[in-house]
Length: 419
Ligand SMILES: NC(=O)c1ccc[n+]([C@@H]2O[C@H](COP(=O)([O-])OP(=O)(O)OC[C@H]3O[C@@H](n4cnc5c(N)ncnc54)[C@H](O)[C@@H]3O)[C@@H](O)[C@H]2O)c1
Image (cartoon, rainbow, N blue to C red; front, side, top):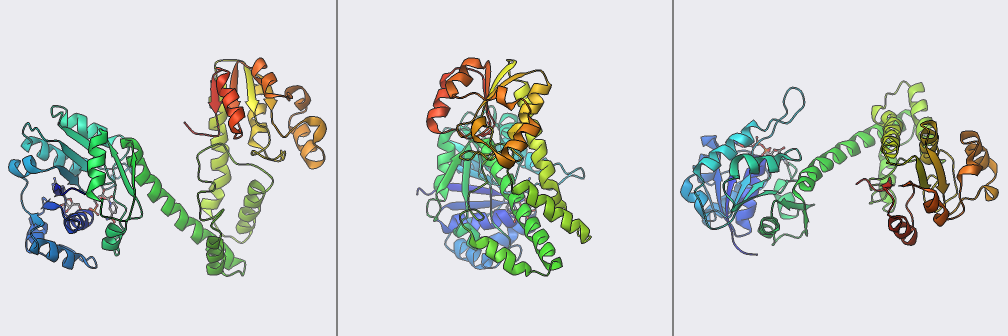
């Protein structure tokens, strides 16, 4: 790790913790805030607010000469390698993000920025909507080719912020140049975390995805807990036991963006759960919304398939997922119905389904949904490709099938991967 000169703009929760933490890692840090009392507090080696351990960390690093605070000057800026913007980004009344403080801070910085030889990574630590970093670079630094913009979102939690800084759950960096992203990742080289270096917009989006995920997790646990309690089950035990499953529950399973879900269990059991909750006068808006969200996702896939530039559409996959011949509530059936309804000619290939081999509930389900299924199913991938003017992947293919589908050169819509 090389020692860098860092200016931290904004000495609020995120800024103070980042400033003290980076100083602790050995960097030369200079804090700036438009609130003079926060600057004075750091200059006097005190935290401007309570956060466990922050007073001591600031005092230690001010004493060691690695942490200072004051006004932003052209001289400080000229020496800096990184400016870390930790400015507040509150909500507007309509829910949109208010970037006015961020823009003002960037304007103030740009006004003091002289032509320079050494690179400067203007780094947005605040939570900003995807696309904001590019807009900031264009608006304030277009005439400074040596300035790059970096998104480096913060994931700390107030109350455990110092521990979260020193033992990060995630380190995300995206830059307008690779060199700038690497330089910012290098700031944290002493910490026990591997940097995830991604594109600017991906970095900005990851922060929102994380917070949305946390909110959904809390909402889910609370709704399941309330339902469990109404049903005479033990809410804490239900969720604690759910969390013991590290294969399907607390894992990457079901967290890849792809096609809508279906099958014989998820839709049926969600319907039963939300129906029974309504009988108990228990409102579960999060769980209630899941099937609707899934249907909307299916409609998006249908709209994309209707945009394919051919009326002859070949579909890979008919079962609700790969590795099974179970057709119950397969979203592909709704996809086929819509395509045929809109005048498309459709053929389908599924490696595990031939009509003469399916029977029972499976057969009656598919025949009632698609009476002409026998005419649609083809027996090989080659036949599917020969027929088609465009292809839809509706179920994850094995590597050889995917290669064959791509090698066809036909327009291809892959619903199993959101591009
Ligand atoms: N607080 C958290 O737990 C947390 C965690 C992760 C991410 N974030 C995100 O980090 C960002 C900062 O959050 P925070 O809680 O530290 O905000 P905060 O309000 O505590 O601090 C923001 C600071 O920026 C200063 N400021 C505003 N305009 C300025 C300017 N032109 N020049 C210098 N300083 C200026 C303010 O005076 C204030 O001290 C937000 O985008 C937030 O969403 C917050």
